[in-house]
Image 1 (cartoon, rainbow, N blue to C red):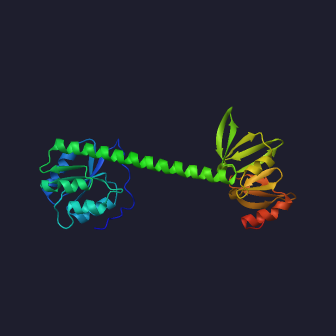
Image 2: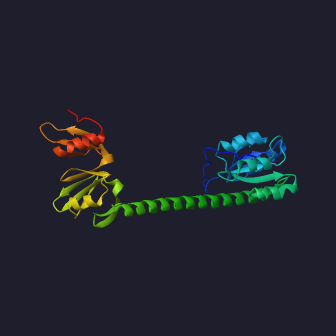
Length: 279
């Protein structure tokens, strides 16, 4: 049977909050007994009920379900067929509740958390839900580890690429007596102050002992533009080129800063941003 793509993925449960449980059974007395049992628990809540596999599939697809308690023999789609169709990715934890013991092996092949026989004992149901919570917690932790590994790999790849090109990807700048890491991507513009440069980033500035010509040689020219001998700007921060009455043009940055542009650079900046200088 073709697996159903659950979209959007089910949100991770809050391990400190109650388990969100869906009940699936075609026998009303069985449903009532499960509802009664869960109502006596402080760490679980019923968020939906279904009496057949098709409705249960729609309930799961909508999301917001951590655990599904479901019967095996139902009209149309059986409990086993439902679990098999949903698959394991982004699926809730399944606990089978049935009067038939012979399907236990099939259930556990589908990674069922537990297999309960009717009539369900309340204490036994509580144990099964505890097991489901542990399973979901392990799954969430594994997912977070995998995501962190992907982030680290991407960062390492970016650093390797920057290193191979020979351009800086970060700077260490003084800040209130400390040294802090400043990614080059966060720089808005740089101005020269004798043998120093003042680096502007997100409303703050940092004074670094380095000539602007030296810093320019270390930055990617595809990302930074020398607009005059005393200023470098990050190209993607420029929003427009403005003319000043009786004075040189200036680039206006996303931050609102205006940086003067040398006359010989005005045509290049105008071409870069694809607009005429404002009158």
